[in-house]
Length: 112
Image 1 (cartoon, helix red, strand yellow):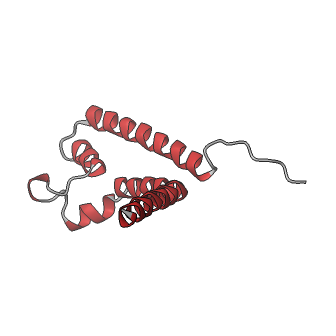
Image 2 (image 1 turned 180 degrees about the vertical axis):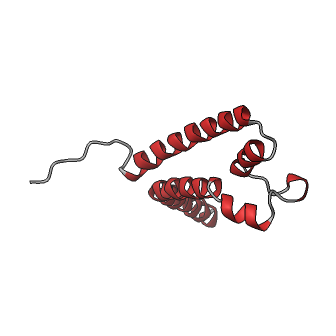
Image 3 (image 1 turned 45 degrees about the vertical axis):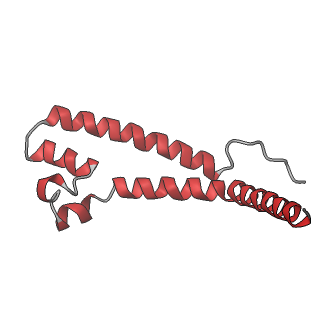
């Protein structure tokens, strides 16, 4: 019976430690995820030079799709609409990035 309670206590301690690590690293994970997502949205040069969108659009990303619509298909309206949507997404991600970077809008104590 004693070994069963030791196992139960050790699993509770592990769960508490894991939850503490998650909460301590959450801002770092959020900031890194946002930066990686924005970086992937802006990787036009690499994708276009290497594959041009790829065979059967396999490596097509949002920005190469906008370029293809505007300059190859001459669908300027659709390309500009996609660009506006991309701008709104990037603006929202920028807002959340700044908010995560500054601590979520919490008021800081004045040090004196």
